[in-house]
Length: 321
Image (tube, one colour):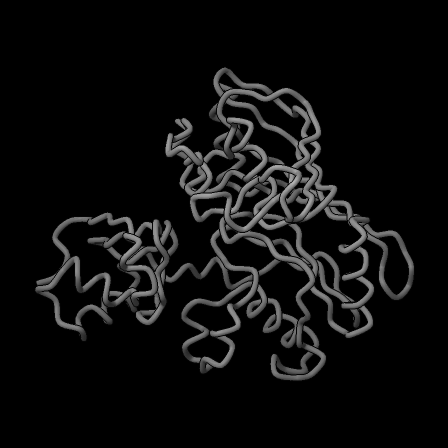
């Protein structure tokens, strides 16, 4: 037997860490392991709306696993990354949604054949630089140094360092909060223009990141929010980061009662209530639209803007009608 109808499944907490193949086997015990691996390789399985070709991929709690009757391809559109700037010290790229920025440390020892099943932005850009410079992806000059990350579902501008000096220089600018980072986010309802400041902690009391009283130890986070465009039931907001903490924009907007459309984690409040969305957007409607910093070696001011990706642009067009 194969898959007779699409099956959707949210990973339960007790199944966190299980392989994708195991999850599929639990959902379709009539399928053999070899058949399951073949279905995964053919593009019949999605994780959080993204085709996954790696049967050994470890799932996380609350992720959505979907078994498809018809394969959805191998996401070949993610193999070409737009490079906005490249020199011997750094590279600035346009990150598409649905691809991880970097590989988890535990995955760095994987064989290249397995990495190729779920390439990260770091992998794809390294390969592309190797091709452009004709030095190969394994050459020392192609290696990237991580100074910034974006969530998997978030699109936008991102910089990698290519030398130790550039890594130190960029790292210092991020540490001093002098890097200019502006995001666009679609939220349900509206929010007043404001500067949101809080102390972020790893566990706000329910196992998720969030804000804590200022008397508690944590990391200060500041987000400046302004209105870009209002719709009947939604608002496009601009968010400028003063600090760059993990999930900062997502947490701050959700704690103000306006979670980013497509949010799956922070829509649940500490008391267990679910904040409304209603957009139907399949991923985070969050985009890193502007990036600016001082070149760590030349000292030249640098700045880029990136247009919204197609899916984000289409939902705005729909709302304008």
